[in-house]
Length: 346
Ligand SMILES: [Zn+2]
Ligand SMILES: [Zn+2]
Image 1: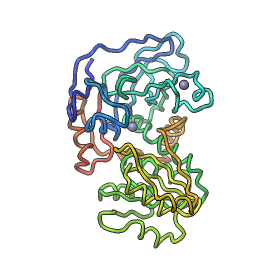
Image 2: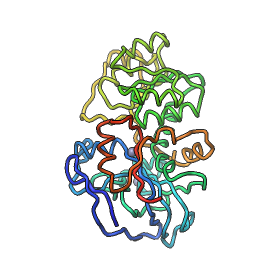
Image 3: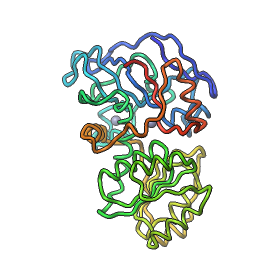
Image 4: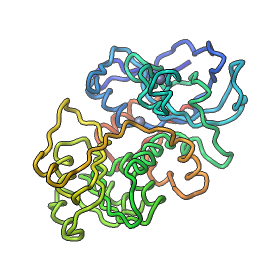
């Protein structure tokens, strides 16, 4: 089969490799349909690492995917050949303390698609996943929508972690795919006021179409001052989706006392800092968001019922052979790109 491999910094090749086999009775063989290009894939592509996870070339890539079932293991109960599924890229062990307490996303023995040294990548013609990582999608849902269910599940999970009260005021700093998914999840969940910032105008326009109350570009205005003029008491929650020191600082300034900052963005640096006296006086809560937990099914439901329109954040389409162009486009933030999709088969 054909599969995409990272072969160096900003190098990616489509290579021929042996197709995977079902070697576990709970395994499901999928023909991959569509794969979303994620910021984390592009981090590995441009820098060769995220924190302590360092790429050893050649390395698989891609994890936001959907496909159709072509074969199932003996013990597979819920899925049958021909069914179409959205994939949770996490393979958890099912027996560690984290899994047993319902925190599969922090499983101590996990592997995740295309994380260096862990699972294979989704940018391949075929993929084997455990049945519990596969979620059947309804007939009306497209492969593209199903591929974007995974980032949406992160938005829904972050929104749930924030425990927003009705009428909450929130800010989303960074309006890339994950920031927009937090926005869509928040607007679907409650009638909250949402302030969104980003450095790229096209992303702010998209945030407005997705229901932002207000948008601002820190290249043009002092966004903290502008938001505080509209919300003199500060906001209840800030979703930091940029992974920058500057946006972490803005988050602390924007929050009201007792507010919560949810850290979703992946910094390229190994350490960040906080204005500890501001944080301490305001008793700010700091909540890290590690991908998502048990939000794939709710995400599918919200898309299937048209409560959330995912098509509006999908901006670019590529074939598997054009994966490198897709990664370069996303890495360089060119052409108003938000979510780029690689169509492996459809
Ligand atoms: Zn992702
Ligand atoms: Zn586990």
